[in-house]
Amino acid sequence: MNVDPNDGVCRTCGGPLQIIDFDDVTLTVACIECSDIYDVETDAFGDGCMTYHFPLMAERLFGGDDGPESHSA
Image (cartoon, rainbow, N blue to C red; front, side, top):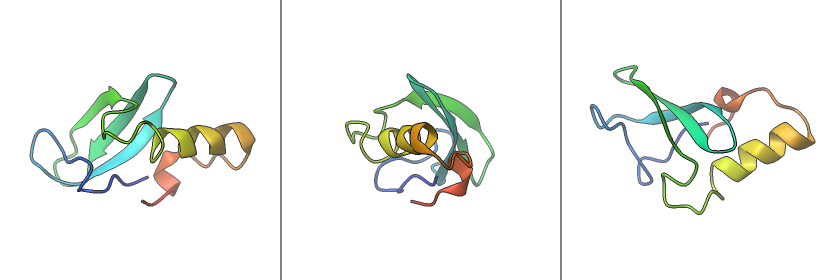
């Protein structure tokens, strides 16, 4: 799942982020430009977990988990 650049960008280079994995407390993000990979809190993008974490978790729980990289923002 891609992160909207208005919500957050790479802390290293300012490039676009993609959520590549997640769990109950973290989102693992990868920069599309510099390939930096790091964990952030589930509410790191100021969305109350509703834009990124909740949809990913719901998909995993209720079917069709193809992984977060299959989703687009």
